[in-house]
Length: 249
Ligand code: NAP
Image (cartoon, rainbow, N blue to C red; front, side, top):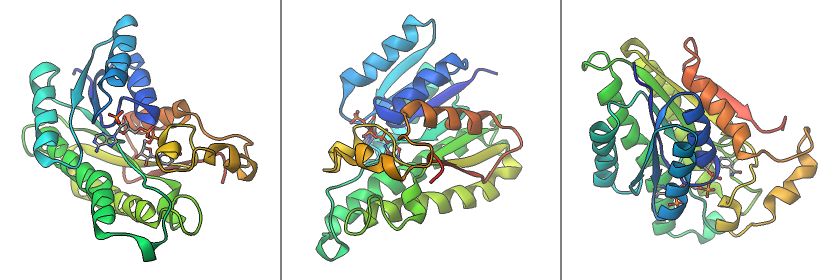
């Protein structure tokens, strides 16, 4: 069977590293992005230069019709998806809950929770052996923030942490729901990883500052997380599992 992977937010950071590594494992890869077309095309070019197959597909995780279109585009151009990596995610500026607007919280939940739910729905419809599919794997990218109450200490990202808590529950519940349908669902919970997400959340120095508290003495690189994602994608006896990849924190 052809191996076909959709990576949401595959244009940069952890998603981009996952796309590159998946291609080396023989996957045809759909590199999803929201706005940075150039970065997504760069990932596609790198995969093609290495002899692999990839396409870049724009879709905003917060817009259901665009997520549906993403899956339909993959059906048409690559074939039926066999692996979904729910990776796209955002943070916002540091803020106490007391100062958060409902719009901010709703946006966080739309991108980080509703998007992965709708992606999972579209994937299950195609993978489930109760619906004519041939099975598959879903890996959700959660965060250490899901069980730390937030993403950067008190007064920073409780909304983000809560969105990742929801991803953990999705992982557990969907794993139970689809185990009999040939689908495995697992999650990776990264600690601090050196990507642009920290600058986008107003804390560009976070990786440098976090280092001292990490037992392995460094922050994660995107490839450290990609490795765990690929493991969970392929591990045939593993479902409903959470892999903490955080340098020992
Ligand atoms: P990043 O470097 O900021 O990259 C984010 C990626 O997500 C980009 O490809 C971006 O696309 C895409 N994206 C953002 N909003 C989107 C939307 N609405 N629809 C579709 N795509 C969207 O982030 P990262 O650090 O690699 O994080 C990836 C995942 O790991 C996230 O779920 C994050 O919560 C999680 N995580 C990260 C860390 C960390 O320390 N870095 C730790 C724990 C968990 P464009 O290029 O088009 O903007």
